[in-house]
Length: 119
Image (cartoon, rainbow, N blue to C red; front, side, top):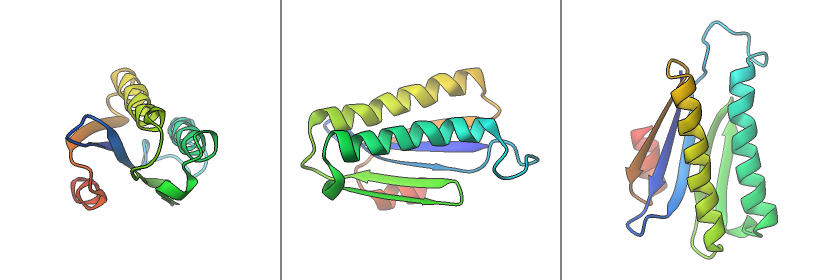
């Protein structure tokens, strides 16, 4: 199962997320379309925040073995935080269609260590 965890700060801003796991443990790595679908949404979000909104210096992102960790620091336009909220909404709509493949949660915190701990 793929899991997505979003951090929301006290002001309601989506500040970070982690996506990890594999939707189908029986699929050959690199051939699972569901995981490609999720990865595409993550990369679209990260690239938009980084390059379109110009926040390259105000974010942390790592991608390793299909696991993603993203943190948006202060100093970006409000649209960047709202885009993370949009990703969360997108993931939740996918979860409704495929509850056996994706679990999405949100926690109230802005620290990446808390995201890692709850992941």
